[in-house]
Image (cartoon, rainbow, N blue to C red; front, side):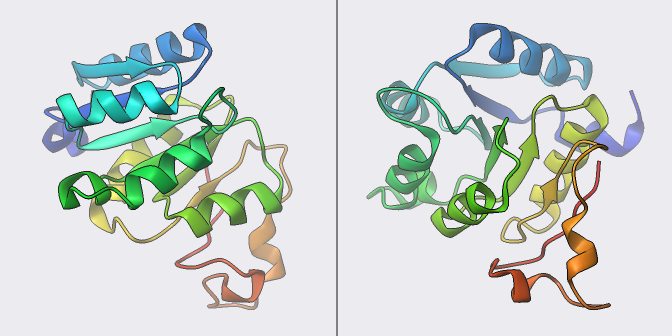
Length: 171
């Protein structure tokens, strides 16, 4: 473990995914970073209740879940009456790597987007970046994914792609 992540070890994290093996994988990655305050939910409604009982510092959320998917969950969270819940950073962890899915999630108010399967380094980097600038959306793709940043002129943060905040592709 590197000392550059030491300040993040006391984070309370809520993992939302309908696949138990994904939750287990993410939990193991977080534990390898020294994070032990981890809760889980298998869909959006359960996650919202969990967030009210155990307000996390960050949420890692899948998109495709039933009955309440990740997009609806993020919208419910962002519209919640409790401002502490509304402002919790949300990182999407999804198998969807198409631009339309990323744009839709961004429009709902996410703070980061990771593509499955995610590496430990990508997860660590995204957690760190969310707390350095929580409103800045960053997108990470696996090495084989198309680099969308090449579509933006030099120095552009991605606004020509229809995304709010910054747009970066990195692992």
